[in-house]
Length: 470
Image (cartoon, rainbow, N blue to C red):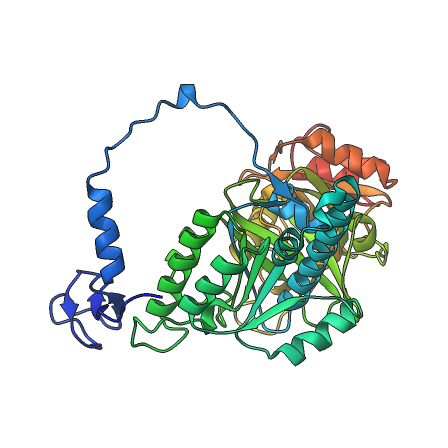
């Protein structure tokens, strides 16, 4: 616990002006709502520690003398989750999981906790068979029990979590701590030394060293910093559940994303059963990996072959195209649907769901200029089936072909996959790892692959893709 000698002040994040209380407008730089509460003085214990460490000799390390070692990872028993993490949980890491309310963050992390608890029980039983002397040692058994997952519940009661646990796996065991004071939480974690800590959620935690309410910028930042130091000191991985704003951004200070090691985002349409887990930051693995889950009554079910699932309901109708995107090390086949209708508005609509709207506007302009299509008086709607968001330009050719197919009311040839970036001149550009994409398409029975390898521009690609030529 920290000493009560701590005092807080409010500092302007624009110019650094310090005030004893919150001010709406900074008197020095005239910026509004820029004051954030921070701890002004260190506690007595921290001051003594800093004095002791001031006499410590600074050591310069030569990296060539350090032996290269891989991160030791713990499997979550969820292959899609491990994929997003880069192969598993790294000890001492701080992971932030964000998502809309009701998207399934707590369900997914509860399922992860139960899997790790079950793994620790199995490994403990196998080690007990090898070392029978440990069975008689009650202290060792107690220590083994303490090394399980600890669930910090700031929003729900233990009874509510019990209902969710029974829904996922009946009669399962999970250690729950109902606490919102971060100092008490740190003390409990230091004593219990669990193998994993889940904090649900970081916006509910607070410290008495700050006067602001829980969820404020100062509280969220200070609590995250303290948990980060704890994770590194005792080498325990900590998962933080983070709320998002109505714009879809993580609530709290932007520095929160810089403090943590991994940022995972759980996305999906509430009306759809599919959930997409996306890594937007990862210090231990790739940042473009996605994991696909299906939300059912008993929790999250992994979708091991997303391409097959997303294309299950595809119909060979005008406006439907199949593209191959690269998600980390795994290629995915997705369906893109386009609808082109006569517009009654002065400015026709261009709506993209799952793709960037600015990119859609650019591709429509290219189609008008290079193919001579009259798209200035029509509404264009483009949707990525399955709830995925496409950020790479390899889907450009698929979007363009779907729009032309809907506009001309001509279907695309069966078993056709479109891969390629479209330039402003209407040319097709090569994309990375084209061989992997083609191999995945052929595995699912798509024999007609159109890319920059067999088409130089949009006009040639349309002749290969559409049933009738333009």
